[in-house]
Image 1 (cartoon, each protein chain N blue to C red):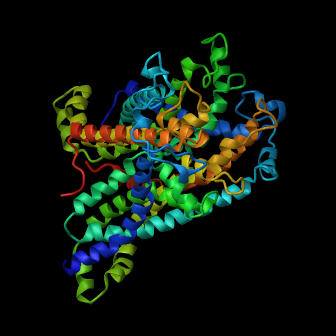
Image 2: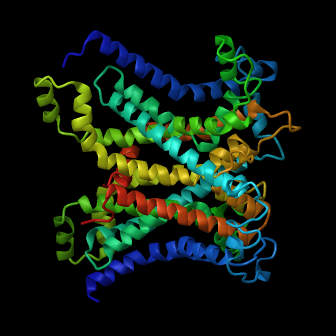
Image 3: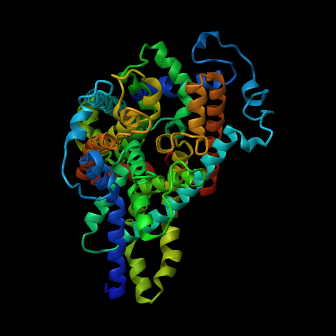
Length: 302
Length: 278
């Protein structure tokens, strides 16, 4: 090992030790717990039970009590909820983010003000935005119900966060409100690196703006767009706090992270909860690999 | 460039809607926080009379020591930022300025850590925190928070570190400076903007974190503000004190808003450096 390499590892060591301690070790222990019957009240007494938590009688993937099929059980519901939430919210955030970024890329008076205002939802903590919207969407005193009734769009006030048919879409809407700015800013950064002469040439030739968007803008910002989408998707797949606070984590909207925490901490089934979290980890890992493959994004450098 | 009048009108209309949708919920929360009693339940934006009672009562409740919670959050966030910046800059020096085998792989692995779900470590972290005697202690949260602040800090600082010209350290090496002095005296002054933006983002992430804070701290004196807000409740299940909740929300959000708006350019550059690397 030459001198330079030794220096490099010396300077990396503190960071690596911390990451090993806070990420790699707990991850390994969690995977180990998923093969045991550990209970939160007595971790020492846990014993190895193999794949029982996954495929055993009450396991995640083979519970015979789910007579209505896998997706009728809480675990199945949480998987469906998470996928529904992630796909819909990321799609909407990308489309709206693109629109907002295009708008902010135009020259107009007060653009700085608009750009600042757009940052506000992003700057508000998730818990606070969940509470704020929970209040605005309140079934009796919420301002949104009041408006909709005044406008005559709905006859009766709706319990947006409690009624099963609305709850998930309410969560999606609040997430879109909060996270679109993030998408818009990333897309805007990409838009601002585009060469101006292309657009001037297109304008001189009288190409329709929509055509310019499809043929020039979109292909050029696609790499940045893909990266932003992947980041958002990974973030959305582990959603917990928004759902937990906005809809009180009830069964109709519970996410996979919510399910894991409920089983592990509230019910104390450390082993079973660990199996669920390991499954979530694998699903997210798989999504990452697929997304990276699909976008042919280059990680690392050189 | 001359756009037709109709286009201009559409542009300004869209911009107005965008601004209203973005800021209205916060303004409404602000308005609610000044309302008390029956006026809470009329949905007007301007409160008929301004009352500070929602704010003052936050700090006098024995079962909900909100002032203490703010201090806890400030303390945890500052420790997290300091530690991640210190570890991050030292690692970024190695990753950004020295070529060695396995560097690309290491960067990818670090990025991988920032992508995995927090619940994937929950059981192991629970055991670790109990083992270290940090259960129920606000400062114990520093440990799990490193999972998401550290990879991000390393990644962004490495990106910035790489962009600095090579000649900088060559002169310093010629003069016989140690690597640590090179970092401190040559790179630190140039990296200020990057340090500010990553530091701010780490602060925001730590300030807002909910899952770990909810799970590892049950003692009411040791809680951080997001959990505190989620737990504010009234005398009974049916009397949710919305005025207090909104007052607490405003208090927690204002410093963050001030930071984000004051440093918006830096934050955006940090975000894009972290994410746009396709």
